[in-house]
Image 1 (cartoon, rainbow, N blue to C red):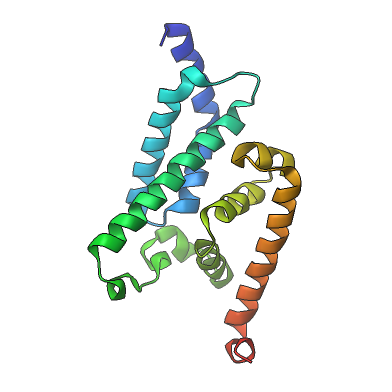
Image 2 (image 1 turned 30 degrees about the horizontal axis):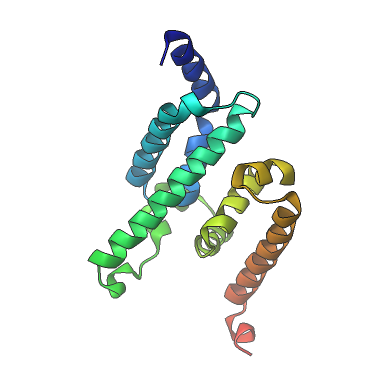
Length: 175
């Protein structure tokens, strides 16, 4: 990479590095795993910068790269855990290991647990939605139509609301 490209990348990266932390927080509960994931995302951004098309906002491109790395990491991690640990050893609350989760209220902990149950695409949609991205921006990042984003987000919101209701009134949810 030429020196001007390197300088340009570093300036763009410096301005948008918070994206990596937001995505990592959405996919990793353990602090050390988040640090590793952010490092891998930064490496992949650097490695693929020569393919960056400046007609697209850097933040959109960075979100897409970061999400792809996070999803790949999540898939690899779940395979590794599934292949190495008995299922009963996995039955603990991940939020208990995370100091940031300790600061959150009960509703936030429940929300994070419910979001963890979502599939990869829906988790990405929630992350981007809560970051304030429009349906058009989210569609561009994840590669689906804006109408599909809106439909999926409505379904996810309903699912999260049902999850809250189920946890608040477990006897009613089983009826």
